[in-house]
Length: 264
Ligand SMILES: Nc1ncnc2c1ncn2[C@@H]1O[C@H](COP(=O)(O)OP(=O)(O)O)[C@@H](O)[C@H]1O
Ligand SMILES: [Mg+2]
Image (cartoon, rainbow, N blue to C red):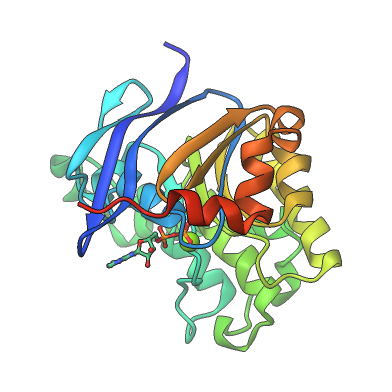
């Protein structure tokens, strides 16, 4: 099996409206796969169902060959699915380095018997190791110089980079990004694309929700498009760029009037 992710017939209903309607797609290992669609199309709902932030009332989610439907978020994260949020979630009163270290807790996990053997000396060694790994990642992400700054004081673009760094340090197989480029200026956007590319080269796959077409067309191997909760297209960036349904979903009012959102 070569899928890292497979979603089958995913459905979600919010207060009588079908937010996600029978959506299926799969994502191959070692690819960057994007999910696009107009505001309110159901994108965030889909990734929240994939990683256990929301329940999955209808359908199935498979991650790296395993059924993870309705598993708790921490279980899915432990299997290697990391995520960043549309509204950044960091610890503002902690430093950049401390935020990263929150993602490195796996270093301290041993089986229950060995836990008794964590001596102060060993603890110091583990702390040092975690700081070394955090240091390498901060270097790679060009944020080392701000490692002692409180995250709450950072510029928005830097917070986004710190959030991705904290996800990367947890060594996931796949990272879900919800609108990583939103709010970034063109220079920051280019920097972010570069970081994503480097992380991908290091062996982590990406599933990206994004509005900025530059980012999407630049990074994606494959794109799934949804509108009003339904999948309307899928293909390579070239195929999607020239797909009439997609162009209409983004540009045409006519499309909205004809289809509308299904009720449930
Ligand atoms: N927790 C919720 N409760 C009720 N409705 C919601 C909730 N989350 C999202 N929705 C609705 O579901 C639809 C899809 O939302 P969302 O997945 O956030 O879209 P997108 O990320 O594509 O902009 C929207 O109509 C939104 O208002
Ligand atoms: Mg969203």
